[in-house]
Image (cartoon, rainbow, N blue to C red; front, top):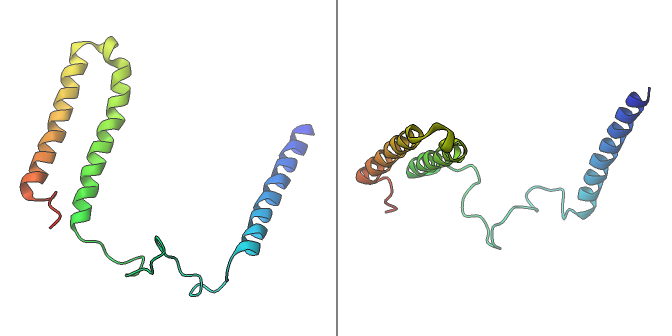
Amino acid sequence: MSAMHAVLSLLGVAVLAVGGLYGAAACVRLSSDAVAAAPFGSGLEPAEHAVSRFHVRWYTVAMLFLAFDMEMVFMYPWTRVISAMGPSAVIEMFVFLGVLLAGVVHAWREGALRWT
């Protein structure tokens, strides 16, 4: 019965915490009207809508970022197992980095990194 009592106590604390945060937010907000409390960035009024479309160039930059992000995801575990696997791990990582470098060179040649 004590486990059930602990779970119910924890649930009660969680409900009180969430309710308290909602109450605090209601006390400190400026206005409940969405137009009167419009968001701003760096003190400036927004020039365009928040869900406006991005230029297609940003998608290429995002893909390049993901490629380098995946590179780091694979390199961290690689550093842990390199001593156990030996030279084959080094060769495999350089092949992987070569494929990523070929992708960056291709994107550069196609003009994906130009901002004008």
